[in-house]
Amino acid sequence: MNRRASRVFLSRGSNVGDRGRYLRDALAELDALADTRVRAVSQGYETEPWGEPDQPVFLNIAAEIETALAPLELLNAVKAIELRLGRSAGSKWGPREIDVDVVLWEGAEVSAPGLCVPHPEFRRRAFVLEPLREIAGNVVDPVPGATVAELAGRPEVEGRVLKNVKIDRV
Image 1: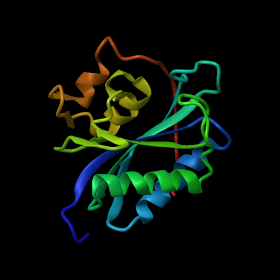
Image 2: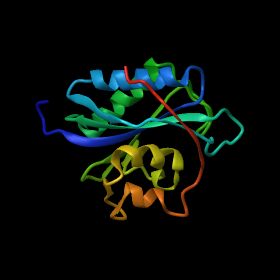
Image 3: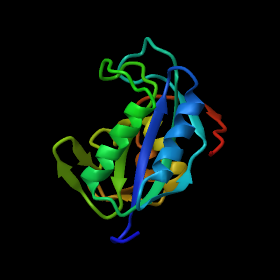
């Protein structure tokens, strides 16, 4: 890695087709990016759909990556991965083959067109917080100054984790 590397935490989800394969393929593609390495991956969490409840359950994971990419470079790479893996256009909270969100960029806040980090909604979503707590419970969200574990324990967290699922890393 030529530039200074940053720790970045991502959330991934799928509720269409072979959910585990989509998540594994997204991990492999992230790990293959220039100046980027996947450092940690949570187990899988089956979760209730959020936003549009009448759809299949999601399989969600969190991952820690180390990257020297700039925030918008990483966002563009993530969106390209989603398209390569077959993500189709749909409603905002509807079913999806793969969804990858940049949740936290350790030690930084990012506000750019199409990207806001910390992710503005992650503090309320169990499907993001539970997997993230597994691999980054002590990481601090710079906005409220609370750890991921503290955020996950707050009463305003919405959604429910149904069960844990082993996701083999490719």
